[in-house]
Structures are given as C-alpha cells and as structure tokens.
Image 1: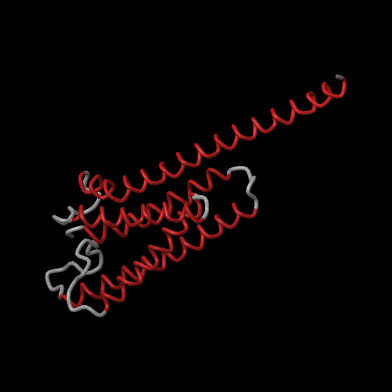
Image 2 (image 1 turned 180 degrees about the horizontal axis):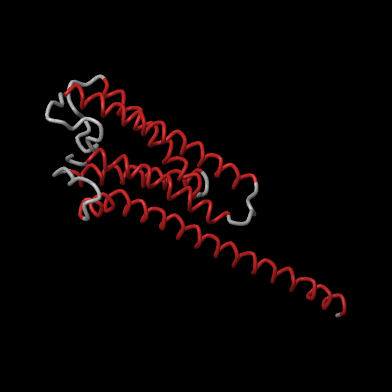
Length: 205
C-alpha cells in the first residue's frame, strides 16, 4: 500500500506538468494563428484599401480605373507568400518586414530598368517634382522617372539594411526587452515602403 501511495504521489505532479505543458502549447498555437491572421488582414488593408484612402484625402493622385485589380492581385500573391512561409517556419513579423523591404528594392530596380529603356512614361503616378514646365518633353519625364526609381531603390536598400539589422538583433537575443516593438516597427516599415511603391504604380499622375 505504501509503495502504491508513493507511486501515485510521484505520478500526480508528472501528470499535472504534462497537462500544464499541453495547455501552454495550445495557447501558443492560438496566439500564433491570430498573429498570422493579423498580419494577413493588415497587409490586405494596407495594399488594397490604403492607396484608395490616400487618394480619397488627396495625399496622392487619383488611381487608375483598374487599380483595384492590380492591388488585389498583388495582395493575394503576398498573402500566399505569407501562408507558404508559415508552413516552412513560424511566421515572424520582423522577418516579413525585411522581406517586404527587399521586395521593394527588387521592384524599384526592375522599374528603373524598364523605364530607362522605354520610349514612354511608364509611371505617370510619380509626381513631376523636377520637370513640370510647359517645355517638358517625353525624354525629360523618362529621365526624371528613372532617377526617382533609382532613388527609391537606394532608399529601399538602406531600409532593407536597417530591417535586416533589427531582425538579426531579435534572432540573436530572442528574450530581449522591446522585441515585440522592434518586430512591429520592422513590419510597419516594410509594409509602408512597399505600399508607397504600389501607389506610384497605380496612380494616374
């Protein structure tokens, strides 16, 4: 009897520990699901609704008639990238912010290459900051667009470097204070940068 009681007393704490671990794992899984869904909804709002809100309040030029299809297709592609990435490894806000920064860098460089070799203005949504007089020619606009896209690529490169450093710092010290804030900053920076590129892409000018 005494041996049985001792065995039971040893079993109870172990069972309680297993139950606690199970509840903790279930809680972390729910938090992860909501974290991924929150990022998905945030990107959808930023990339589809964001440009329309900016245009509605006059922050940017009116959008092209079929801008919704471009924005929606882009958002769907990025949502798929988010969910596929989560299958490989757990989704992390700071890494996704870095990914969006590098995506903007690649898009700006591609846009620069296309514009510098084109015979017409491919980005009418970019403001005519430097060349806007009555004697402005198509070549002037093309050079201006190419210069602005090159500048955007340079900015995106710097932002990618900053977000990469933040990401690396978070990965090195996973329990560092302020980690959630740094991860959120990375996500917001990357999302805002790519949203800015989308606005240039779909604006009428």
